[in-house]
Image 1 (cartoon, rainbow, N blue to C red):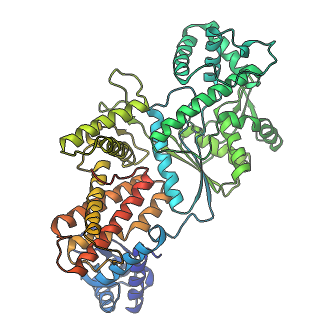
Image 2: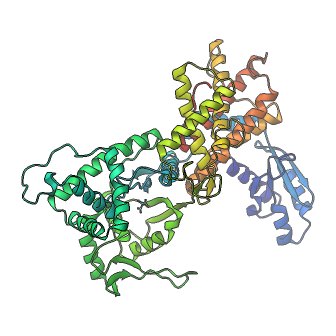
Length: 588
Ligand code: ARG
């Protein structure tokens, strides 16, 4: 379905042409003076330069051509040559009726036939999920949903950090604690137990212990390195332990992500990429792109146009080991083989930007991705506490995701009681859970992803202002009107009517932009655009609501037009918050 702004633009282009000027001058934009008009065209000013005449002359000529327009209800030339536009009520209402009847709010499906792999989450196995991984999960999940809504086929991959020293640390410490386990017995040839010899609680204790110990105890550090090397050689016992660590961690991670409404199609990790490394390195050698540098093998990725120095991408260390970049390159080999994606989107802390610049360039030089495949880092900023420093617990430790969610839940419950919400115990809890999710996710996503932001529980859980709970509150208000309408015997088959007030028109104009906004959010990898949009709609709706009798409107046609508008509002808001990764309760 054509975007509203395109329809208006074409109408203006035709008017310019008919008035004797170049079509291309008819570009329109949203009004920056909403008190005067809804859309505006500044083409007369550009035309004046082109044709050496007064802009007002061009503007008034164009305005005359618009007098019969079925789209433009009023056009005015305003000094020095602006063309101020308002839409015909009937045209706008008809546009909304179509939006309402089409699937996905009339989106064209910019992504149809295209496949994208999204790499997000990126938790490190055996370490508890902490706030550092929260943003990746929230932003990535939202991007996945936005892209799918736009018609892209999306494969989401959690890309576990499961292949490094942390594994060796755990295994080495486990060997100290439980030397009798068969995994450590080189003579053992039987089958290893199916059951892991530890729980997630054990793992969460063992890792920090081991990590701390390796910093003060050199012998232990050496053991951990050796264990890592033996694991990477896939020695039988070590590999069996590794499998246990993965399976225990992954089921815990799945639980945590589920609590966040985040899920992945693919649970691969760094370890799965290792098998692709030898052939990849052979291929790089035969292409002649590896260069030796101080015993290491590197790929040069600097380009002449670089403003800052981009160091070579190291693929093999001097001791022969592979590293983060090697694994990421090999992961691209696997993704190319399995999915042949049109693009790969990484949602990772922006402090890793250099790694990704090197990775993308090396992947292209090595011919791992096709020239037309795009690779993009959606790098995000840090979540800070109210003191402006990276978010910590009250005791100064790293906050665990579970605690963040339960703290938010408590704050929300307190707010609900404060504002007199009382629901049956169970519903109180489930409603608080939905509101908490909205508070956390909206609080994060409403900021441009690349910026740092302050996690402010007080502000995020407020029912007023630019917050998730405010959006839900608005939706619940709409739901309750629609419910009362149905309960009083009102029925479907309703159509949006031409607006009867400025407030109603503003709401209609906002709703008509859904397709444009959702498409831009995908093209710009910008969930915050959806946040701005749902906030704008909520404000427009609440203004309309406060000055309009809806259910008590006596005229049946007018009332049913309002109801149709409300249900479209609910649909647009519902689809948008769905893409942000949360949902609204029935009442609150
Ligand atoms: N596990 C990594 C970390 O915690 C993030 C992984 C990001 N994805 C990637 N393909 N490198 O920093």
